[in-house]
Length: 455
Picture 1 (cartoon, rainbow, N blue to C red):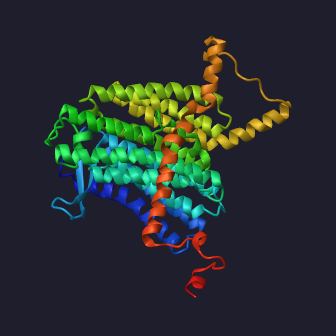
Picture 2: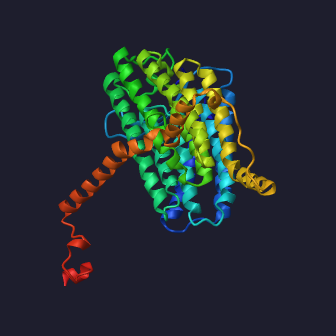
Picture 3: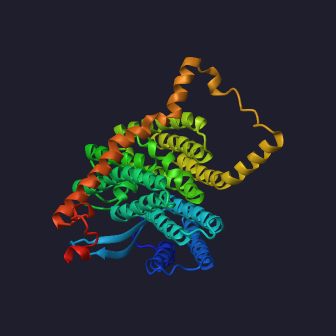
């Protein structure tokens, strides 16, 4: 591991991280003062930033093509509230640079597509603010050198995802579904935060070299029991973010967002973020047989469930989302089996393939409707396959389970979303009681405003 890298590498990483941060600040500031940039400028600035980020990451990756060393880059501390402070550290190697470059390239394609797809849309600028937040989070997640940077990137990805699900907030369904997604993400984030706290407690450090580093790290190693606890918490965090069982119920609800956001989140990058985290945490998983068995079991069950469910979906976006989840489950199995190179190649190829499918889905549907109009009927359905060898009574039961999406949505609503909502209502009432806020329902008859009450 190299701790003192050459200046060009540090400059390239600074550009790749700093550029989307500046884009987020510019677009966000324009929105805050209610002076959004014109669409043409927003599209060109976003495209230019993504080209710059992609070029910087590809150049850094080229310099690492012949080495397996890891480089820890430090850009100072953002907090000095305690002795060591919270440092801005980035762990650079071929894996992190490869995933970061893949993320930047995919977001660049999606931003160019979105520029035309959302033309004259009232939330155009808001969409690009959230897209800038997302790419910032993905790059922080890919290149994080300590758990604080990792957690910030993890939160950026989750927050932008939930807000884009609620993009069409004038309708009740997107807002309700975004709350459902956000509720599940809270469980994932809580597991990630708990793992970070325990890492501090068990190892006395915040460096991800303990989780993602090589065996040559000079940092104190985690014991078997401690490694198992942290690895299991990471698997729970991954399950929530990547929609593994038992958290798969939120996935079809997330399709309420615009098609480009569905492509980049649930077809390409966000749903694979958990897989990348497991891939980077492979040295930790290798210390815990329990964690590897748990990850492999979840991967197998998720792949089987998603493969069954995707066959009965009535809309193309949900069908593609469950098809993506099938491959995510397979990737998790590959990681649990120790096939790390195969898993990363599978991840990269699948992300690009699903991106193409999601973005071309509207055109495919348009062409299909044209064929149906020309034929005067629907094309004949495909017959045979696995369904042909399943007995009728079992096929009917599996069809019901798949049609109801494993009843996971109702289960998540009862066990997660409903308690989450009730807790929010309770805290709101408690806050009003503490502040002695008089709600309109408590005002005397005839007093409709605060001024009337004062009089």
